[in-house]
Image 1 (tube, rainbow, N blue to C red):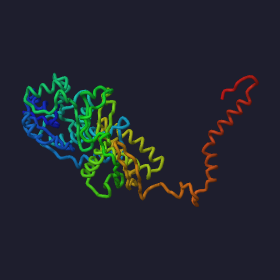
Image 2 (image 1 turned 180 degrees about the vertical axis):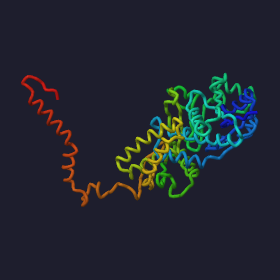
Image 3 (image 1 turned 180 degrees about the horizontal axis):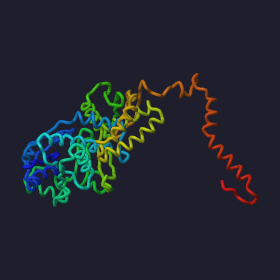
Image 4 (image 1 turned 45 degrees about the vertical axis):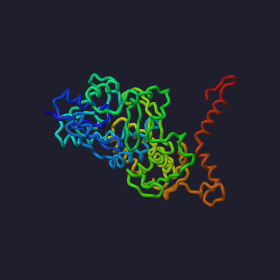
Length: 410
């Protein structure tokens, strides 16, 4: 018999893939479930996989690796997609797929399988990782070849085959959750004019129901990496979990986005990223304090490209290695603390400090100072505006020299 290793979440799509693979291939089906911070969603996932027909299911705790090796580098780069998406699903897929390949090698797999649809981005992220680490293994993507055409069809298939699922035709959202965020797609959200239902959200309180009193949180960074919350040193997973709880109770981090999928269509997703939104706000503010203008501008260019790279699944590339090398240099002085004030969905910067701050009150004060000669500005402006002045003088000369009654071209 051949052996197929399936990236398994326990959700609707991957649950029905197990019996489908058993029906269509003379193969053992080995599931790999990655714990990247889904919480209680993984409770009983191994038993569920076996009940669905899997021969074995490996459950791998990847939370620490996910935060330190994927989330933190993306945060330090300042990468986003579509102006506001914080890349929660995009960052997790390369890690999950690489672990899937590692287990596939351990069990002598002859093929890899995933539950991504042919319309989405995840198929690219998984398969580019397969290409990087298992170019010899064929890939089975049931959503691209079976007769199931909708989530309603998938629910009917699960019911017919006795596969336990939580999705219903009333709540048919497609969700992806990890320690960084949760995404919501499908159902009523497919109409971009429709407001998300109140019961959609899972990680954050609605701003209207958030506390009537603001709360301040101080985040400390060491070379661009978050290390403390309110002065307390925390490990990566604990730090992010703490900020998720703080941001979530104040309704912070909700994003409603119509985005451009890699395959060419626009889609609508609603995201909750409470802790991540706090970290991006604080990290950006600290960079503004310690980086010079041209370095900051150059990093903003890299941030955009880094975001597209992550979104498009090109994590395992020389391109990312090069971007990381640049980002690492810029982060050498990004150490200090930023205090944020949270109130009913808003994030307000309340203060920032760093031993590497380029801000110097002696230079910018409106009071008397002994370090800045304001008369120097006159010479600077003359040189800075010299090209503008020369062009104006030449234009005036041409106009003055034009024959009477004729208009010179400036």
